[in-house]
Length: 172
Ligand code: DAT
Image (cartoon, rainbow, N blue to C red; front, side):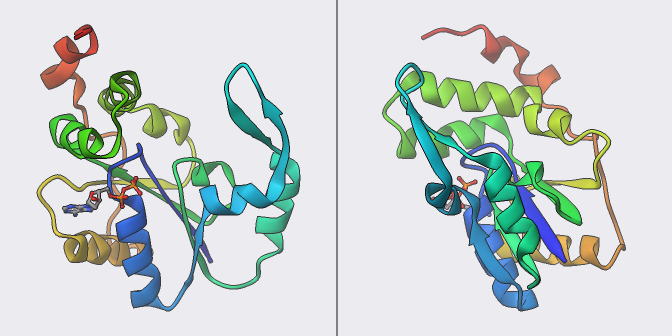
C-alpha cells in the first residue's frame, strides 16, 4: 500500500509522515529528497531543477514495499490513499516565518492554504483531509490510522476562505 501525505509546506507533513511510518511499519520516503535522483536539467528562469517525472513515477511504481510518501507533490504519484494535512493559515504563517525570510514565499504558501490549492488538486482522487490545527502529532497519526481502517474520511469540508479572504489581498 502506498500512502501520500500531502499539504502546503509547513503543515506538518514530514513530522507526521515519519511518525506514521514508524507506527504502522511502513517505509518512509521523502519525495523532495527522492526527486534529487531524477534531475534532468536546471531551469534558469525559475531557478529550480527540472525533474524527469516519468522516470520518477516509474521508480515509485516499482516499489513493492508499503510506503508513506511525504511531500507536497506526493499526491501526483500512483498511490492508494492521499491524506491532505490542513492547518489554520494564521498558524501556518507563524511556522513559515520561522522557516523562511522571504515574505513572498510565505505569502504564496499561506495563500495556497487559504485557497485550498492541494485539495482542489486532489478532487476526484481517493483523498481525505485532516484539520491539524491545535492537534498533537500523535492525534493526527491516530486519525490517519482510522482513515486507513476505513473508519472515517472527510473531504472538502475545510474552508479557510471566509475567515481569511482579506489576507489574500494584503501586500505588506
Ligand atoms: P512540512 O513537512 O509540511 O513542511 P514539518 O513537518 O516540517 O512540515 O513541520 C513544520 C514545523 O511545524 C516544524 O517545526 C514542526 C512543527 N509541527 C509539525 N507538526 C506539528 C504539530 N502537530 N504541532 C505542533 N508543531 C508541529
